[in-house]
Image (cartoon, rainbow, N blue to C red; front, side, top):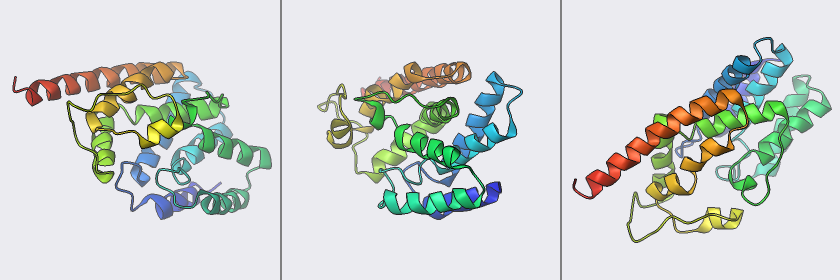
Length: 216
């Protein structure tokens, strides 16, 4: 497998993103997923690590948030993976993870991902936490014309994919509606530790934001 070909595919579809889901996000997810996996499985096989990298780099290329035609891109992705000599069961596993790992897809029904996919999912969710997570939250909110904060708009308990995508939102509310909850969704021992540290950092940020908002 030539990782440069996987990277080129990710560059093609993610380079122009301004919502926090750009190529560099994919690269960080790929590298973090590999790091987490090696912490829990120091003797990991090269094939396992390659699958982690592929899923990490490609996970947002067919995401509904930023992909106008997921079916078309999925077809192109399948051809790429075949050309990299991946077996059909490996390709099917990659596509299952990419199509079922997002937070919104798991609100109404929790999808059980294969072990490799769980590390990629954890890495992706950890990317929504800490200093990087804060920056990405405001980038996404700004790109979707969300208010930074409005005390009259209260956080909601999100119970469906439709509600998640369509409810009235502010960026600060997003911390309460999703980001502060991600720590509890971690699949892996290595992921839980980092998630806990980054979530604490975000709580301190939001606490300080609200103090400044109130003029304290």
